[in-house]
Structures are given as C-alpha cells and as structure tokens.
Image (cartoon, rainbow, N blue to C red; front, side, top):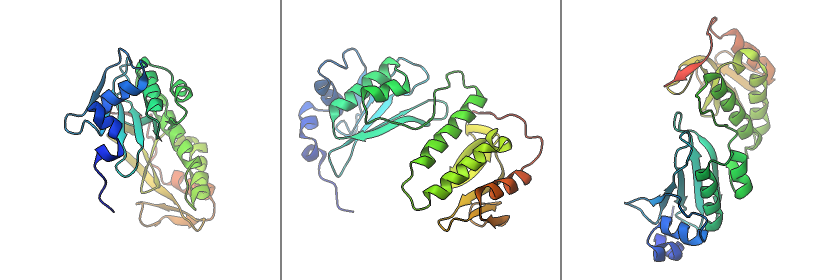
Amino acid sequence: MPTPPDPAVLYPDVAACGSLAAALRAEAEGCLAGVPVTSSDSDPLLYATVTSMLPHREPLQISVWSHERRWSIRGTEPFQTLSLIDGRTDDLAEVARAARAWHDGEPLNGIRQAAPFVHLTGRFEVPDLDSARLVESEWQSMRVEASGLDYVWQKTYQALIEAAHAEPALRALYPFTSHWALRFSTSTRPHLTVVGPCLTAGSDGMYGVGTGFITPDLGLFATAHEAVAVAVHHMPSGLGPVTLGG
C-alpha cells in the first residue's frame, strides 16, 4: 500500500485551523455553538470527538481518511461499545450536523434526517440495559447487516440469519458472529458466554453446522431451515434468559 500523503496536503483547511475540532466549528457556522468538541492531542488533524447530553451515548468519534479526502463517524453506546450509527462523507458540514444531533440527543433516525450520510446499524438504544432488549437490538442489527452485504454469498447468509431469527429457541439467545459464522451466547457483550453449535453459509449455497466455525462436523445442509433445526437440537436444555455480560 502506498504511503499516505501528509494530512496537511489532503486537509489544508483543517491544518490552517490547527485541529479537526477547530475546522469542524469553522465549517459548522455556529451549528456547534456550546457543544464540546475536542481533538486528539497526539493527532489533532486526524481525530475529534463530540460529547452527547445523553449518558447512554459515548462521544461521537470523527476521523479522517488517510489516502483520500473523506471523514468517518462512529457513535457507540457505553456498555457494549457497539455502533449505533456510522457513516462516511466528503462534506465536513454534514459531519457537523450529525455531531450536533448526536450531542443534542436526537433520536437515531433524527440524526440521519439531519445528515443523510449517516448509516443506522439497526441497533437501538437501551438506556436501562434490559438484557432482553439488548438481544432484540443485536438481532435487528444482524438482520440489517445481512440485508446490505456486498458479497456473492449475501443471499445465502441472509437466509441463514432470517431462519435463525425465526426460531424462538435461537431468537431468545444473544447472537454474534465470528468469521461470519453465526454463534450464540447466554450473556450479552462485553463478556459472552458461548453456547451450542455455530452455523455457516457457504458461497456454494450450502449451510454448515459445527462445534466450531472451521469444520461443519455436525453436517452440511441444502437449506437454512435444516441447518437451524440441527443447531436447535444440539443446544443445551434449560438455558434460561440471557443475562448482562458486564
């Protein structure tokens, strides 16, 4: 990979302001008045954060791209540190509008309305850390992700996610993926308690079930529903409700 240019070359306006935080304020034309915006001490041209009035939102992370002029954002919740929103744009004014909405506590879809480049991950906010709602949020995020993948195996993978979600025994568990293998936990992040087999969706249209994600030692199947049924059969009994993994 070629060496990236000096940030001051791609972002002369940011360099002229002295930091990404200062450039954001300048571009915002008053939109960020009264909003705490800070830049990294070590890389002030590359990173900035914007706090939120809501305690269940981490500061919005803003970063620059190194090989082309573009900015990325990421907004997370503090318990699992998972993304609620993200996005990329070449318009710093749009970043400022998203930052203002994040700070003011606008609903997630309201942030997207303020700045259309914002991508909603599908997760929703659970301020009271209700574990059942966190499970529901993670399933929703997984379904949103599966519907938008740009891989040849996207339809196969989406069919697997949808079939697993349709099965009550699996839908009650906390889902996560490792190397695109679907797995389950009886606790939420940040400390997962992994249970049962994992399921995979191949580019050949086949579905694997295995005790690990490398070898489908419990079988290969032509449909997602068959694979899900086998996974349910190999789940331990009496798992109980999902708990917080804190």
